[in-house]
Length: 321
Image 1: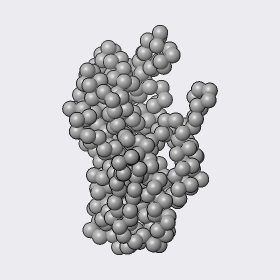
Image 2 (image 1 turned 180 degrees about the horizontal axis):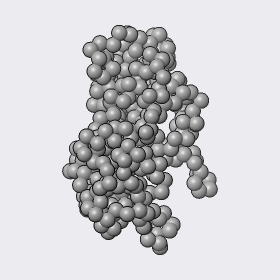
Image 3 (image 1 turned 45 degrees about the vertical axis):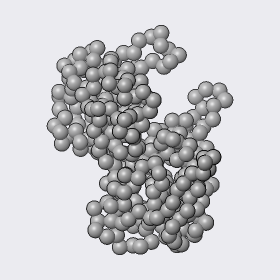
Image 4 (image 1 turned 120 degrees about the vertical axis):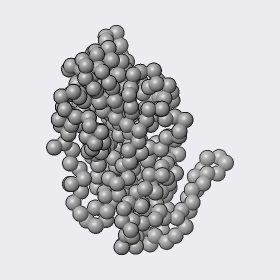
């Protein structure tokens, strides 16, 4: 943590989605959160008031578009407009979790590409740059016509597991679905171990069985994913691993949403520990009992200072060895 950031034109503001993370980021940068008021009228309308001048300043606005997604998205759009009308020089939006990123293509006829729509809205409102964390689909960067920096959490998890002695031949890194192979491969490189894949059938293919590609018998498994939402995909993967003789099963994910009945679903399968970052704020009653949270505040704070001081972002984006 820096004692005091020297440039008064750098200002960090936070909306309502994840105040604890925003406070940590500001402390790591070496400044305080800017003053603003966010309230809702009785009919749900959002009103935002800036309580300090931002004229000519470089603003870093922190907001995850997590549950309630649409409320937090509207807060973000309204705050961007407020900053633009208050003559902020740049409006850099820091989105630790980018909601709607899973809707990145037309998978079925007549479906919208909502991730692109959100990108359009943010740009139209007046955002000048985006800093985010582990986008569900990296191609979402291409939906913007402004700079987008997508930082990776994989080094954070690698450091966590290395510090706790999880590496070597006794360990297997597992992707819980085919689409997560790259993520699992990179963590396996960090930890110098093998990997496996759980080939899960889609809802349309549930007449077939989910099966395992790789050997986990007698091994310690780390299942790595980007998002834990309802926990159903993860629970299915854990069941497959247990059925194939895994000795211990650990789970890691960049964004722990834990919506609906995720806590109860995950409690029914043999998971030793679940590890997520604090990119999303989750109420205590929704958190699994075996949850451990590691902070992404240092990484995002470094991203902010690199952008503001015009330092290359490349060292923060190294993924794999």
